[in-house]
Structures are given as C-alpha cells and as structure tokens.
Image (cartoon, rainbow, N blue to C red; front, top):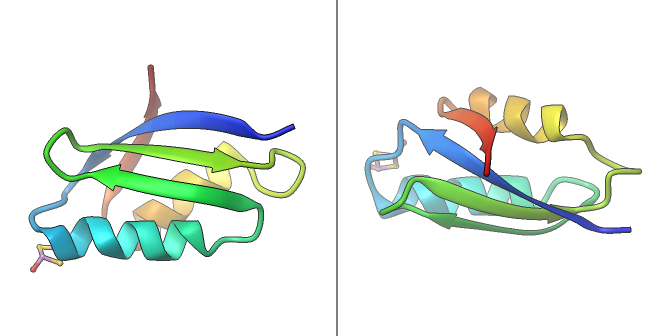
Amino acid sequence: KGKTIQLSISGMHCAACSARIEKVIGGLEGVDECSVNLATEKARVRFDPALVSVDDITRSIDGLGFGATETE
Ligand code: 9UX
C-alpha cells in the first residue's frame, strides 16, 4: 500500500534547506515520512500512491525553489 521512493535534490546549501523540505513534504496529505540527506542530496519519501503522486511531490519541492527528480 505504501510506497517508498528516492529523489535526487538539487539546490540545497544548508541544513535549513533540507529541514524545510522535510517539513513541507512530510506535511503533504498522503506522505507518511520524508527524510532528506543534505550531504548526499537525496531524499527518501514514503507515501500512499492513492493520495499523492510522485509528480505532486516533485512539484512541491520545485515550488520551494529546489530541483527534484526520482532516482534509484
Ligand atoms: Mo540555507 Mo537553503 O541559508 O534555501 S535555507 S541555503
């Protein structure tokens, strides 16, 4: 039911950036968990695909001024 993806995030420069993404994405309806690693520029997001899509998530990150693409 839940799905976990990894995203590659561009444009983060400090811990406040990664914390902001975690807070906003983690607060989206249907997102269960969002952890962002500033050093590796990766985010792991666990969500319910019935409630929110990968596109919704990447667009929200784009809207914060960062770049996000799904990665392995
Ligand atoms: Mo840190 Mo990020 O000062 O948008 S918050 S660079």
